[in-house]
Length: 370
Ligand code: DGL
Image (cartoon, rainbow, N blue to C red):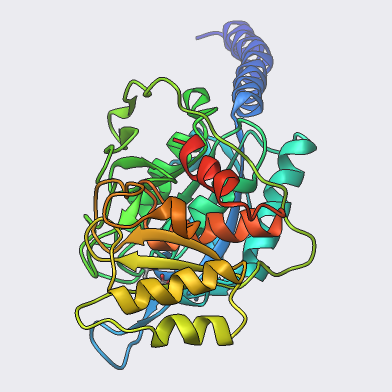
């Protein structure tokens, strides 16, 4: 090839490169813009971590043993691949406790942070990571105090992050799917674990160790979710109406005790509750919210002293009905309807804190929210 031919081939080659570079840059730039634009459209999810097994770490010295609340919310979310395709996530640590230690201080901090994030439009949805032992109580408390229709999802796990086939990562992924989905709006607080989406009023823990532990005995899940198939919400029963109560001033809810009924029941646990200043007593009754005559007499005396008495049941499903074997009208008692004792306690605390103590008004509150 002559020298001229070589020179012009070199020029052509350089010209092609000169052309290609801006094209390549444009491709990166537009791709980057595309990715940035896509990211900008993703829903903003605020994750509030409280501890629990989902943040637990196994004790290397003993098989099976673990400690709750060891991993931060930030670390949890970073440990789950693919979340960045679902939402823009911001994680904050509210507490690092096993949920058997859940308390009013954490409840109030959660409620205030969620309300603030919604009122300032900082988030399109909130996820609370939580231990499973009292998950249902926190879910119900938040469901009764957080205003607005943006999704609040509460999630936990039955096995620590370090366990063989840990259930936390899958639950977290599904929680983000639900919190990020516009169809989740207006449904109140929902618990997402093990492919199920369950309402705060009904969901309850039913097994000490199984990952299939949360269920809603009276009305079933509000929907299902899986990492591959997405979300399916069941048709919502008409007449579903949520009431929200003012978060009481201070950091403490009124003392309301749960008294568990059993064979050979006497009045001692009720008298103890009264002597420790209980403003309300929830009976975890046998059957349809029943208990022994001596216990009933003590509850009647408590009601006469202005202590709120709510008949709930230790039975897992069904509704507690007024005036069947107990004369609620005469005694001024309230029935919890479908609320189990631990949730009846939360609603009783909020009602007393809000100055509602007349049994007719209390009964309306227990019945109006389902
Ligand atoms: N320590 C219990 C709790 O934090 C463990 C149960 C769990 O989170 O699965 O509720």
